[in-house]
Structures are given as C-alpha cells and as structure tokens.
Length: 111
Length: 232
Image (tube, each protein chain N blue to C red):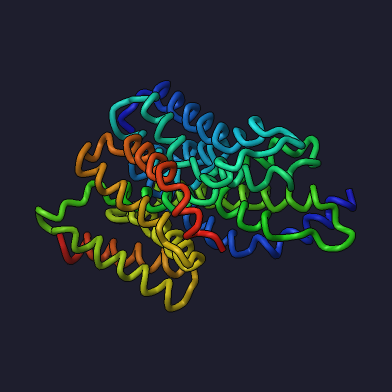
C-alpha cells in the first residue's frame, strides 16, 4: 500500500462512480419508450469485440520482446489458455490452468 | 415473501457456473490485493461498491502507482465501456422493473448480463425478482471470493509472483469466446491492431485513451463495410 488512506479511498470512489456511469448512461440517455439512434446500436454491436482486444494488449503492455525473457512466459501461458479453452471449453479450467503455468514459469523456470 | 423464495429458487441453478468463476477470480483478486499491502477489508469494499471484475484488477495497478484520479476515471470509462452496450441491450428488459431497477443496472457485469439477457423466468415466477436474485447471487459470490482471498493471502504466505496473469487469462478467454461467436473478426482485429499501434506510438503509460479514440474513429470511418461484414 503506497498511497495514503484518503488517496486510496478517493480512487475507489472515482472507479465506483465511473463504473456506475458506464452502466447507467444508456438508461439515462434513452429513457423508456425512446428510440435508440442507429449509430449507437451499431457501435454497441462492434465495440465489445474491440474493447476486449484492447484489454488483452493492456495486460501485456509491460512485456518486452527485446529483453530477457523476451515475453516467452507470457507467450507459453497464453498459448496454454487458448489450447485449454478450445479443448475443454471450460472458463475456470482455462483461467486456472493458464495462471498456474505462468506462475510456475516465472517462479521456477525464467527466474 | 413466497414469491421471492420462488424467484430465488429459479435463479440459483442458473448462477452456478458464475459461482465457480467468481469465487476463483474473486479469490485471486483478494490475494493479489493483499500481496500489494491492501488487506481484505479493501477487497470487500471494492467488491461491494465497484463490482466490476476486470476493472478491479486494473484498479490494483492504479492503487500501486502515483495517485492520479483523473487518469483513473478515464481508464475506468475505457475498461467498462462495453457496459454501455450491455445497457443498450437491456433497455427493454429492465423497463418495468420499478424499484429494483437501479440495482439491476448497478450489478450488470459481463457474467450477469450473459445470464439475464438470455434467461427467461419460468412459468409462475416473478421475472423482476428472478433477475434481481441472479444479480444479487452473482455479487455475493464475488464479494465472498474476494474476502476469502484477502484472508487467505494474509494467513498463508506463498509466492504470489505471476498470479496477476489471472486477468490476462480472463480476457484471453473472453476474447476466444467472442471470436468463436462471430463469423467476421474485423472488430476484434481492429481492437488489437489499434491498441498495439498506439502502444508503440504513445508508450505503455498513455496509450489507452488514444487507442479508444482510434478504435471509434476507425469504426466511424468504415461504418458501411464493417456493418455489411458483421451482419448475421
């Protein structure tokens, strides 16, 4: 914990408000019985796919492919998640399996 | 009262898959928070008032770097932007939900959305309470997992290095599920390509907002071909 108590509380409040805003905004902008514009519906169809792509990149932003270990642990672990998920199609197995493999790799193999 | 019991009984079986996922992810969150020096009270507080899985993992990073609430606000909007579109999809279904509507909106996570948008209340079960209990049970699983993880993390000490990969794995799994559900992958590809480009141009600490703007610009500029390509 590197932040002061008040700073941490402010951050939690800000993140809470931001989250509530993203969830409530459609209901505020398009109250009952009002037509939703076609452009918004279009964005609603396509953005979720792009947003998850962005989040995957966000998670990997600190990985350097130019310095040791060259992103190899991340590469192996993501590959494992993909294989596990295509094989068993069980979210829990894919996430737990991939995380365990990654933890073993960074703690025991690529130390 | 009997009406609520019936709705709870109908809702519970549908939430079992979410229970396993949320307990595990919630525990990982609690353990990770504890490893960064935020004891389980913080995990519970955040799971009650933020209640957004992916955002809470991102929040751990925000709580461990220099204090910047404005940046945190924009990252929250970005990470949760997809909820705007869950809301748009639920405008009709939540229309006549009365006094429980604010909670249904507050608790509209990815997983709750996936159940509530597809499940219909069985014959004779009040559909508003049915949706309410799906939402409430899911949040109970999440808070319980976070509390357990936070307590476990403070009692047993083990090497947590690498446990933050749980977030990467979660997003990769959602990415695969979305990829499989679509014939045309252009939206997913735009998301990854725009983000990688902005990461290279703007660097790791400030690429999120440019990425978001670029994604919306590309979607706006190529609306017609994308719309034709993604039509089902």
